[in-house]
Length: 199
Length: 199
DNA sequence: GTCTATACACCGATAGAC
DNA sequence: GTCTATCGGTGTATAGAC
Image 1: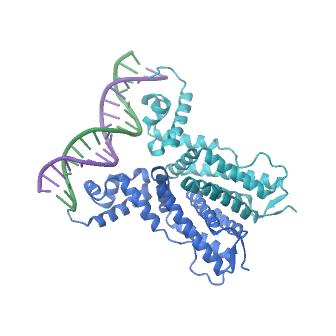
Image 2: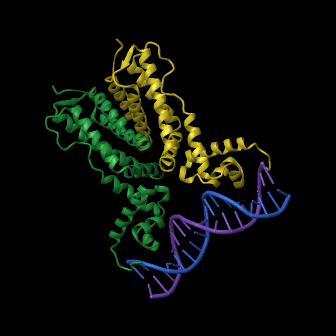
């Protein structure tokens, strides 16, 4: 092994990255401490120098990875577009993100389920963050298109998160891009029923 | 142990049931062959007499459990109700089903993710079945309310499955029944945008 | 056919040399 | 601080008595 002194914070970061890589490529069940240190090129003992336990690493991984989620739902170029168009483009952008790295989203799902069983409050925090991101995007999109929501924005946000979750699960299962695009268009049309022009 | 001869088919059934019980209560990761036979009150050797491997049992469990899914989405009493009302009642019925046995749905999710990694075609079959059930329910509900769908029914069905998946995941995470009901109402309103009166 | 006993790989975690 | 070596435990699967 590479008998080199590495600051513990850096080691922890490397182990977190390695753990996510292993989970994404081979699943949470295969993410043993040994598999993680092999991925990171460290010895097994270094793992337990940086973390007390595998469980501690996984819990930290959940919070880290959730915090890193970006509001990728809003398209960059928004001028002159309708809200329905923004919804379609936003969801399509998410689909592209999913297609570009399916294993990443699958890893997120596995971590969520692990969290539900072992640390429910972490899972709740993760979903709270998703809903905040969705709320902000929905609010901004409405504001920029002279529209407002007829039901409370958090409720629409929750529904939008349902749609992205469903999109993720179903696409991971059947990889049917055409059906996914059709569904996105239908979802956007449906969501428009929850809006009205700004008075 | 209970040195009694049991037909192999019966043993397989008992092991499948026991496996699902263990997965629901303690998670797929905890569903070792030892845990399963303990739940079933058998010896470990009986497991490998009935199944070649743990993996074979899990694959069979996925197909069995999927086939047993019922179209619980349609309310029983439908006369004189609007389509929107039917959608609300159907989704609320699903929420009640989820609240009554959360661990069951969590087990289904864990099995789905296992299938995505190990036998994608099984997962695809599972979701295909969900979409068929949803399609049939949507078609019937529209027919009974003098309505028709403006987009292809399979597309609406896919969206509806997204909503139930999202409902499941988010509710398992935050157990917020009030928010779930608000979201169901919003989803029903939104879906109505995909209908028109029958000509 | 059904059991007990066991083989053998891998797990998380730690002791102790350096 | 970082390593190698090893502990005690559990995993899947099987051998062999009955």
